[in-house]
Length: 345
Image 1 (cartoon, rainbow, N blue to C red):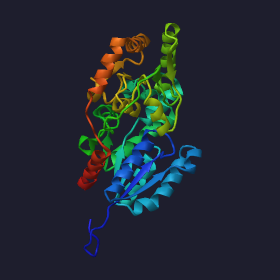
Image 2: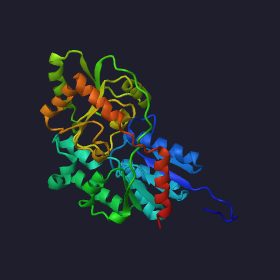
Image 3: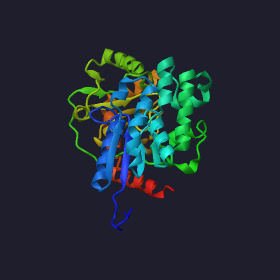
Image 4: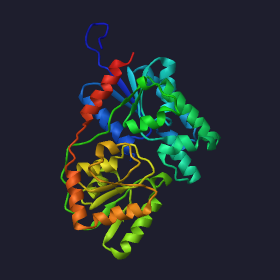
């Protein structure tokens, strides 16, 4: 962009995210790595995230963030928003009012996650909108409506997988031309340590859709005749977690629907065998790299765990994950976001 003097003017990009380091979670790491990469490319990047809003109830939280985001929106050229509701609604509304370019990166599905947590029903993400919408309570109907507003009023919607785009397309009545896919980060291979124990890493948030009760039940059965097997479930800051993962025997994730799980991508980068839910958005990309299970089938999960405990099964799994070679760097991701921004009218 050129200013009034004809000199090159630096593009200003605002990133809105519900969490940011030191908070733990995929969106926090995504926001940090994307912003760091854009700054290296000489863009002016600012971050707006929840502070006091985290302690406020829904609605009031959104109003406070809306007021906070307005000055930043007014002085930016484009806004990248890393969820569809928490910061998504107030930021999209501000961009709409003040005529700013807004790009929504969908991440997970806030509505589905909240519904499963409230009801305790183990509803697969891919089935959610076809089976559960008539059972929404008032809050969920409001969230659905506001999410639809966000997705229909953002300048562009970025999905990390075509799988999630297909799930959202019909219920949210999306215009396919206003959507695109930017895959998640797939890093260069790194070294890991030879595991000394059969310790599986299953760390994740304690939520119904993460299906932890099923995973713990399966390991309770396996450890009866394999007492050396253990399951690590603790949530740690990212750097500490990666240190723990480097010495892991295997990684396991059996959630009811995961778009692009960082834990699995980290395992692939470290050449650590993994068991992953079949209900995953990146299945087509990583299907040859690991073992995949029906999250509602305990016997299938148990069989996959026991397979990894055999010498031949583990060696074969190690070979499969080591053979995965696709790389998609933060530089690639930043370039693709910039292409989206440059193509917005």
